[in-house]
Length: 190
Image (cartoon, rainbow, N blue to C red; front, side, top):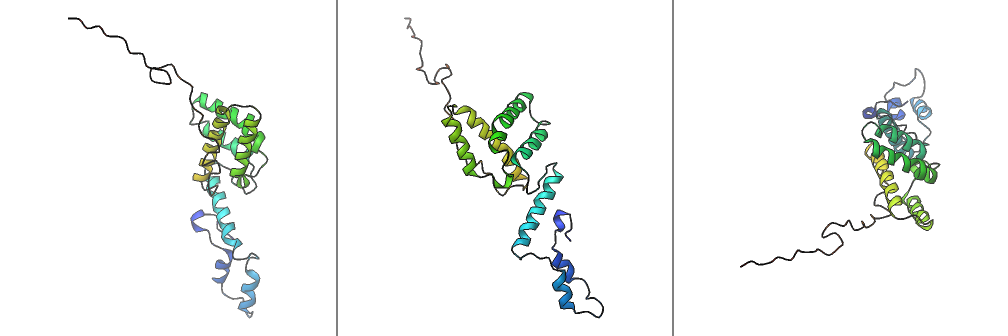
């Protein structure tokens, strides 16, 4: 049995060893039967997964180990709707539903890696898309995965460092921004 309070996660073997031996029975056999059938290496991993699951549940996220990227991004969007401006929310929603979910939606969140993201960028650029849209899609994905990392849902953010760097800005037409600066001629009056 595992206690469900994240601060009090203890293994079943620790609880069983604290119990008194059964009356008239062999205490060694009792402890041997009651221990979980997991190698010692797997037990800490399972406890870490349970801890991440419980912390995610407290924040309103389904942090199950089988959660897909599509489910996580949908829940993340719903949580962000309360704090983002409507125009930012509309862009995030478009990038998530039109680009990110079709590309990564069937993957498990824990399996998403930098190689998947790099392949997405390569395919988008090969399809003739400019650099700006894939860059903004990756910025949205990085924001979502950064939240997952901060909530201990992921061990790291696979979208960081970015697979695509910020595209150069076009000249704005303002003096000093890509165009020669025109200085007005001054007349000297005597």
